Image: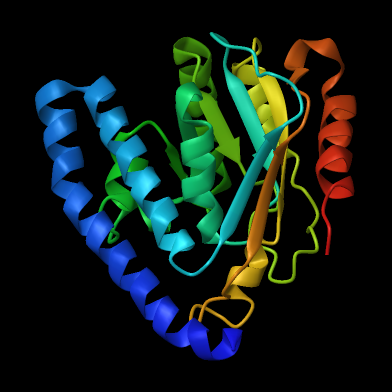
Length: 244
């Protein structure tokens, strides 16, 4: 029955998704260019709220849990495993009070209404994975922005999505640079489960009735331990909580 329902429900999902990103594109542009960052941020929050409903349309349940209250008025570095693009709106919505910004590949900076605009002008960073020098420079600048504005930077150290939920090897460079340039930050390990099941058959049809879970572990001050120890602890914390 789920397989049968997945086809019409996937169509509904994509129609709603396309509608919302197209409607909010001019809203974002107007908000940013007329009223500035704070109003633009509210428009992005509203967009992510509606994008969550596109997931609910295919029967997705989303649980968000947090191990310990996150510190406020300090930068955060949210480090997460990565299973599908469908994680972005839940992360953006549930961490909205901390102004989440993403480390993303440069290809996403154009061509997608609302999404590309927010990545390009909303404070996130676009990196060229084929150009290490550009990536390192952009990440250093991004780290300084997190430190200055007390924003939350979201990074997926696997570099690419896991298609079966099994975490890939974490790359050390991104977190190392952000930790260096945002020294007052707290690292928040984030484990995501079951997101991959939404796209286990590819982009169409989507999985129906998936129970996506996001769990934020105890935050760790960047200054509390040597970086190598911090990196190992973050990677083990995330991976040990992945369920298949």
